[in-house]
Length: 435
Figure 1 (cartoon, rainbow, N blue to C red):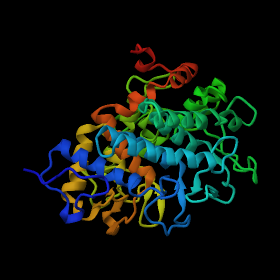
Figure 2: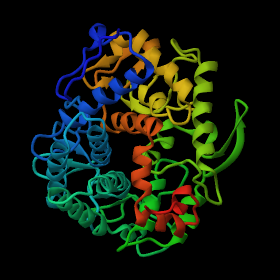
Figure 3: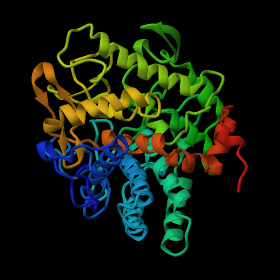
Figure 4: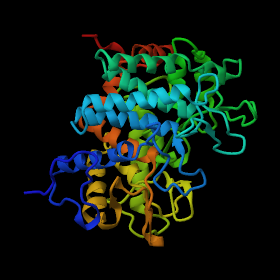
């Protein structure tokens, strides 16, 4: 017999040495999702309901820094919580309405929200000196998560109000503004104070595919398809087709970059059968993941703890601050979200990592919001933080592995199907019969 028991999200399972023991694989997946969900439910801002950037509120952005992209991930987590019975449907709708009502009143720039928003006032918290306005990539993660909610909550009354408010945020987002009046590329930032001073072109391959898909899908402010083909797909590190550790990588820089590139957009975009003239995205993401794992197994830098059960390099906190960990920038830091959010691509390998993190290292890694952000055995360092952008993919990608729920909901959006068609994508969802 195991010692896991049904609990409400506000009641954490035991942590560290007191964590539940003797769980089956499915019970462990359920526990990980449920405990991680608490970050977005119990840890939500009391006024706005938005997702905090992190649990360590003493960082440079302060305790009121709410993550717009992380809030989109949190919205997805709430849908999963309803489906799995951790919260009621009414509780979820009330929380989501609190969030979207606040977002309507907060600072926005041509319908696009900033990277960080003050959780009480809705004012912009600058991400950097010139980044004090709109962030269209974070907006894509938010809108993607809200569209999942729109497709899930199909009832009357408050659910209808929620859909209406989500549609307003969606249709008022001026994606084409971020092409600067052109048609060949999107730009990441705009500021009423700095204008286009950041001058950051969104070119691939990285975590920004969803920005182009939603930009093309917009029913009101759509980008031209040339922005995708002449901008995104013309990135300096877009096409690859070389082999690393005997594994062919279709897209991206050498060795693939951090693993969140295979996860953020693909929490929503279903990579199964998704392809265009550049890649098959299931093959892309699986290859990227396997290269990342193989690097950790071979461990060319000789770091402590690495191996077939302990792998996963991605952006996270580390013993020096924060970095985009990857084979070409390996600091000895393992980030649990990297392997756990890879469950759809590498289920057996990800389960091995999960068992290692929970069964063998759980005394130090398993806390009230699930696994801590990262750890570095070489430096004898363990994070004391949880980050919204690392917590969200764990819940969503494990759910997609278990049921495909979030993929089904997002890919059912008629606008998304049209946007993918416009950009010359193909997906089984685009051919599925309605009803």
